[in-house]
Amino acid sequence: MSDKNTIEADNGDTADAWENWRNAGRVAKEALKIARPMIEPGAKVIDIIEAVEGYIIEHSSGTSFPCNVAINHIAAHYTSPIDDPTVIEEGDLVTVDCGSHVDGCIADTAFTVALNPDHQGLVKASEDATKTAIRMMRPGAKLNTIGALIEDTIKSAGFNPVRQLSGHQLKEYELHAEKQVPCVSGKAEVLVEEGEVYAVETFASTGSGNVSDLPNPLIYQLLPIRVPVRFKGTKQFLGIARKDYKEFPFAERWLTKQMKHATLKMAIRELQQNGALFAHHILAEEKGEFVSQSEHTVIITDKGHEQTT
Image (cartoon, rainbow, N blue to C red; front, side):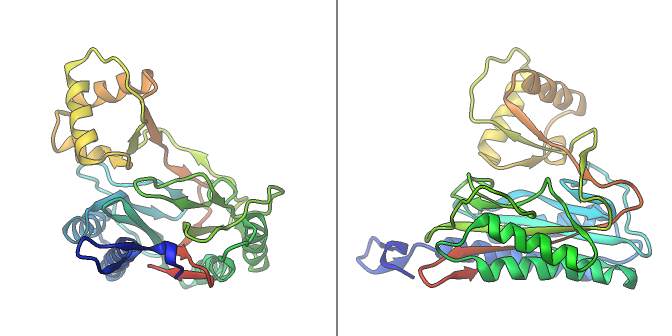
């Protein structure tokens, strides 16, 4: 680590400025360890999600986004609604994606489990692509070149990268900062710099690699703007969301436990109409296709990188 990655503690000792990032990574990693043995036929998705989120809430400052469980053709942004009846079936391909934070310092990590051995090659493709990308993460590396290597790794395994999803830079209280780590090659030469943090994630698909939005989103995020609201329930919604979730995405399920369902839906509608609430739609490939994901968080150091998850 270079000198700029340390800070002076109140007692005069030198404290590592990256400690919160490391602790967040440790918590997210341990949360995924809880999830892995739960992935079996007959398991309820909501049980997995609540176990992961419960561990993160207990051992860190909180979640940096709701735990996602993606099954088969679902690529991202599925979290359980309240009383979710969804269960894992024999032969499913199951991804668990979770995030924690310690005082705003974020970790983001994911893995995929194939309950059908025929899908193990798809799982390996995203794992290999993420490992390849992480090996390249160091000061001066070009993100478009890393994207080309991700694309080549996945295509060489016989699959397609998901174009619309990418890794992303992390900043304090900011899950998606300016820079992206694409899953495909590109022309824009954006450089990796020392002192940055990235969530490096790759997605491999048996289909075209193009995902689309599904209706009825389950994850939302407040935008950093103030808008006039008329409905009393909207003011209640804003009070809860700003206090408990700050700048991070949150699950509709969480608010359902604190507000009446009809009131919650009206508040969401008003805030979306005012442009103050962003919906993270569920992203999916064509039905019958399968998508795997692999993700880790890395700190860019003067010598290369440090993986926190």
